[in-house]
Amino acid sequence: MSDQILSVPQIGEGLEEARIVALLKQPGDSVRRDEPIYQMETDKAVMDVESSADGIVVEWKVKVDDVVPIGAPVVVVRSAGSEPVTPTAHRPEPAAPAASVSGPAAASSAGRRRDLPPRTRAYARDRGLTEDDLAALPDLGRNLLPADVDAWMESRTAAPVGQGFSDAPLPQRQRILSSRLVRGTKLVVPGMMNVTADWSGIESARAAQAATGSDNRPSAFTYFAFAVAQAAKNHPIFRSTLVGEDTVRTFDHLHLGVAVSLPDDELVVAVVHEADTLDWWTFAARLRDAIQRARNGEDQADQRVTLSLTNMAGHGIREAMAVVVPPAVATLFLGETYWGFADPDSEGPKPTRCTNIGITIDHRIVNGVGGALFLNEIRDNVQRIRELVNR
Image 1 (tube, rainbow, N blue to C red):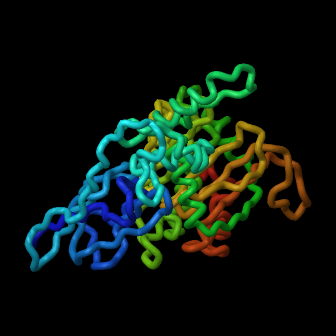
Image 2 (cartoon, rainbow, N blue to C red):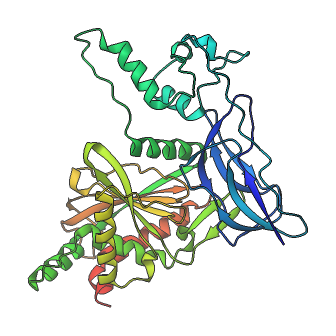
């Protein structure tokens, strides 16, 4: 047995770095030669990178969202019948610093700047810069960084007075989220549906807990999240993710993501690991702790989060179309509470406290009936929540 180190390949002239988008295998997983093992993003595209050997994944040298140079070690694969090797790819030597500060001095013979790495080029495009603008960026004798783009834009717009606008760099967390969302639009085939649920059971459960005089009073959203976690026990497809194009990986338990809003409209993800194994009070405590860590700026998202929740109940939003961000296969939306009609009995419809629960599924792995069955079980759990929490 020997270890082989797989590195970032050189896939195009002038490419110097790439961002790691997804790790498609975990340590201990087997991998076949020519099977996708991770995904990376350049300034042009997101692409699968295939293993050059059969073996077992030993260790990842990178994590999701790392920006690494060409030739950097990515993963160690243990294979049989070959000697250990070092990365064969290498990072191209940078061009010699140029004395001029004009764009052409930093351009290749094909007119493409050698000092503008994919991360910086993508950042500049997000800021609205054109190819002419990129050519006008100063040559600093080194690779340009996003901060250099910001500095150039500030110098270009600082002189005029009274323009009526201001520019600011996109926050780092939003840049990461943006990258995940853009990747999602390239991969996910979305399907959306919703149900109306009787919310009075959750309001009753909260009132009963308040009547005990305890300071421990979980939010209505916590009760809802518990109802979702319990439903996931019976629907393993929502504990699954798509690896590559033809492999479904199903986790033993649910790693539940919750979108948490931060000041200035930033967004991070809190995670309750193995949420479907927890009793009510342990679940409530774990969710409270995860949300608090998220509010302190800790984004807990990882490759195990297959289902996410977004809560707009406190913002007057009754219905919305949630977005699925891979590797998740679905996102659930919880809307505001209102007076309506849900599941009328034989005596006819009666006004009751209602909410709308929506789901967006990734149709590549989840079909409509599967999504509907899961959504209906969540609705049933919401309506019998006191029974669930008192088990």
